[in-house]
Image (tube, rainbow over all chains, first blue to last red; front, side, top):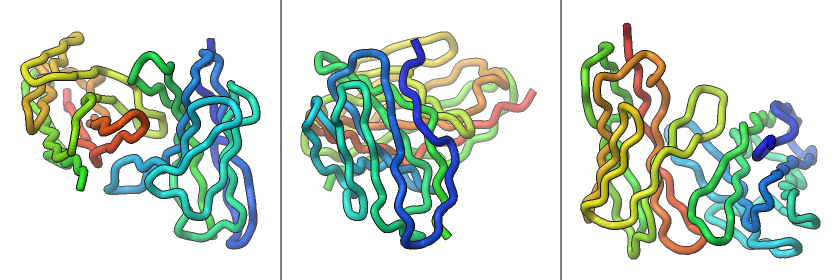
Amino acid sequence: NAGVTQTPKFRVLKTGQSMTLLCAQDMNHEYMYWYRQDPGMGLRLIHYSVGEGTTAKGEVPDGYNVSRLKKQNFLLGLESAAPSQTSVYFCASRRQSTDTQYFGPGTRLTVL
Amino acid sequence: EDQVTQSPEALRLQEGESSSLNCSYTVSGLRGLFWYRQDPGKGPEFLFTLYSAGEEKEKERLKATLTKKESFLHITAPKPEDSATYLCAVQVNNNDMRFGAGTRLTVKP
């Protein structure tokens, strides 16, 4: 039981490049979330999904897109990366019946 | 506006020196308050959930309490392995969780 895993662990992009971050969970959780964490600030919600094929915007969605084609996977895409998107990105998941979110190990992204 | 404020930003303790971390919140409707521990380079690890004022939860040297406006994480006789950043979060609706910036705790032997 690996829990929540994220790929890749680190990535460096140039401004304007695109990339996709992958989150996978093996706990059969219905809900999945993408957050970003910046120094001196709390985790902020980017997008979330309440089930396969559904997504919704969070607090800071601009510049990001997401997809949930399979229940166990949640993808976060950056279409045209900007230096302001330099951050650590965390994925989380939870069961529909509980409030507790379980987090992955994070992806550190640097946009030059 | 929903806000979560944690204090202090950083706390240095000697091993065995008990203390408390504070999380104050202003939210329109509290559905739950969460404490997480985060080690450097890792994701947050769940510690506690509190739902109503007066509720308390304990785990080893940690005890979390909740009032109508704030939560405290009490650390009794801390050890160096308790060094981490402790995050507080409040759930304001089904999928909106607001996090504080965290308290970075260092426990020196």
